[in-house]
Image 1 (cartoon, rainbow, N blue to C red):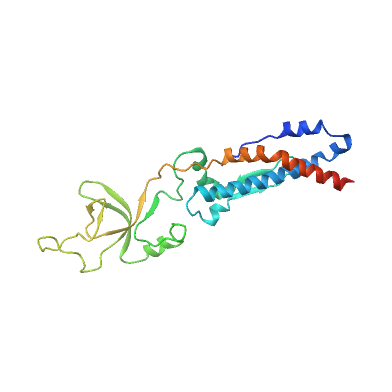
Image 2: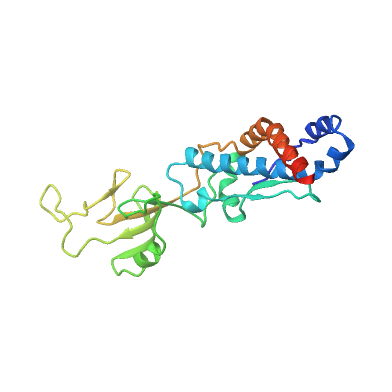
Length: 227
């Protein structure tokens, strides 16, 4: 996820004109301290934003905001989304479709999910190893196909039809009989995201709201320690 460059150079220049020569010597150190302090505020704000925008996000997603401190020799602090998370969080900032780990979106049906509403690790591998489960497409009479993880009915447990004959009405998908098969996980296409994270806007607001205050604190501290 690209991070915008937010400049506070005009703030620093205005302050510089008000300082004595001795105070100006401490300015680079103070600027680095102020930028770092504001960077931490942005990092905290972005982390809280993720927690507020997403329903029960995983710890990996919640802790995906990183921060790199500024230095006296490098007057720049950076707040960023960590690489692995940036790939799937990008559409929540710039728009578009969900980024899928594979070719399909997993939509669990009668499968237990973890506390974050996701499949537990290894679930697909365990299901694939079961003799009553297969992964693939099922074609209906109208030509429509549903791709997913399917469970075959237990032997001898198919329900009887209305006329007493044995029928394959054990389960339905989208109102269509599945011939006794039970859909456990449906594979679907990526869908457009419906949440806007607002990462860039929030970062800009937090920087402009807090920099002057943090700059004043950092400069005061730098002048005291320089004596």
